Each structure stands twice: as structure tokens, then as C-alpha cells.
Length: 113
Length: 112
Image (cartoon, rainbow over all chains, first blue to last red; front, side):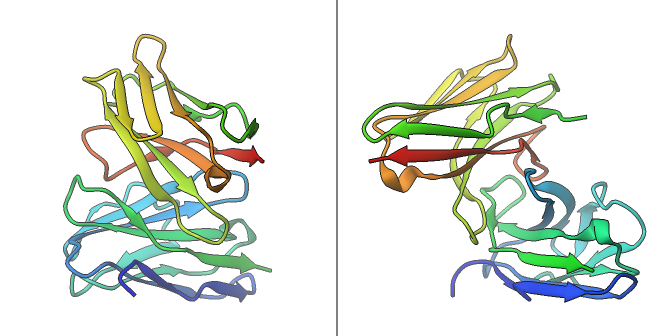
């Protein structure tokens, strides 16, 4: 499809495990964003890429969270030693440029048991 | 510290009437404001935005009003249609759209 694609759509894991969430942005979009939405809350900014580099990672909650975008297209959000509090919907968005409209994917729902 | 607040978790409006969704913010540095709409199991979709140099922006049935002195914005939908039933998020940023601060959302239900 032409939209932002996120996989997996659902992930259930056990506390302490490692998780990777993938985002495939809209073709040609240079900017990519990760947000996290907890139950009953709005999306919360995690990290923003312009090209391959993380332009702003100030929203990452701690050093268990890491994201990469090695070729300036697909991005992977990596969570180490998952905790129950990490359970949320992880949303990826892309935009054509730095200040362009954000297009969101459907999200990856992470449940940590 | 919630910088963007939507104090009404839900709103119910009759079809054809006006829907008014409200949002308050605390950070006076915010200069760009947006509304997003979200259906279940889908990502948020952009609806309308306004820059702090304006006090009103209109797009079809949707109008956003910004009151900077009150740090308040609102989204008006008129006439409301059943397809407008969704969760609406307001969001704000400093210097552009890339790092958005979202409110908690308001679930709008349009009754036939």
C-alpha cells in the first residue's frame, strides 16, 4: 500500500524480553517519527529521524529504548528488557519534509506480560 | 505535566448540529496547533491546523479557532455527520510539526 506500514500489528511478550518494532514509511518521505500511545492518553513523542540520523531523541524514556534508520527509509524501534509499563501502541509516522504533514501508521500494539 | 489538555473525554452530538471540541495548553512557546482524528485500529489522520499568527482557519465543515490570550483552541464541525464519530486529538508544537505534544483525546459520537 501507499501508507505507513508497521509490523507486527500485535506483539505479546514476557517481561525481560527484547522486542523490535518495524516501520516502513511512505516512499520519498525523509522524516520519520515514533510516538507511543498508552491507554487513555494521546500519542507521546519518542524520537524523530531526518534521513538516517536521529534529529531529536529526547522522548525516549530510558536507555532500554533505541531506534535506528540505517538507510534513511525503514526504521526499527528496539526495546530491551521489556517491562509491563512498556505496554502501549507504538505509532510510526512519516512526512515529506521537516515541517510537513505527518502521516501515521496503524501502530504496533505491544503487551508485556 | 500535561502541556496540552482536552478536559472532555467524550461528547455526544446529534447529526446535523454543531460539534465543538475544546483544547487548552500551558506552554506559551507553542506556535503551531493541529487537530487529528482517529478511528479504532487506525493511526491518527491529520484534520486541520492553525499557526499562532492566525486566530481562525477553515476547511469545509471544519473550523479551528485559536485564542492565544486564553491559551485555548477549539474545533467546530458543522454540520456534524455520523462519519465524524471518532476520537479527536489536539496537538501543539514549537517551530513546526515534527515534535507534537498531544492532548488526551475526546471521543465524539454523532447520533442519527
